[in-house]
Image: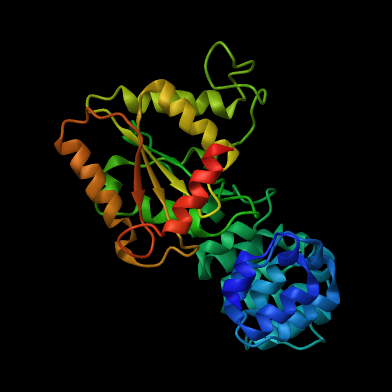
Length: 332
């Protein structure tokens, strides 16, 4: 049934009855459900999904509307299913604190107001750095929070590698990018290149048409793209030219990443683009293919500046259906 749901139209993947039937029969169908559909505003649908065996109830509540996540009884049902000591006499904030002290990812079950609470966010991130994805923009660049997540970057020396990932501090994206950044920064081989994630600073741009250069940038003081362009230039013009690592998630590059790729091409900076079929960054050797590719490039004199794609998913090669999906996106 999971495979059947995967092949259905987007409309059917957002149909309440179809989704419930599919996930009830095969919990694996959960990954193909439309997580942005209006069904997540339906408290009856969410309540039924929470009760299903084989589906993480906390993940169900992650995607529910803020109104549903603000429902105390709904929250209570989820935290109890996750074996958190709680009762309905507790205030909502107390319940959420008890939950994240046990499992940081339960932070995603909190209403938006509590996702803006730095105390709760710190507790959650100390348990699981991936919980950073749920922190709202009002707090998600707090230095203490980034330090707790292990991705605070105080490096001041010139960078030898630039990271291009989906903006991992926005709650729309998966935790993969956050974990990817952390692993790269603390990796035995890649750490020496002082990898830098510009997405930890302001995302403000002067204009949608800006490409970060002097001709198109209208306000260099506030424009993130202009600063990113300078980072690329500095990385390119080191004694030993650096490179950019661009991580493509399963859904493809974000619009911002596509712009960053064009900027790197204009600067003539080498780009290694990893792609995967996983939404969880788990094994220590996930970066081994990327390390081999970078080592090979350096051993060959850093002369090949063409985009190099590196598979870091399950298996030795990317599945044919994934490659077909990527080709279809590239043709649009």
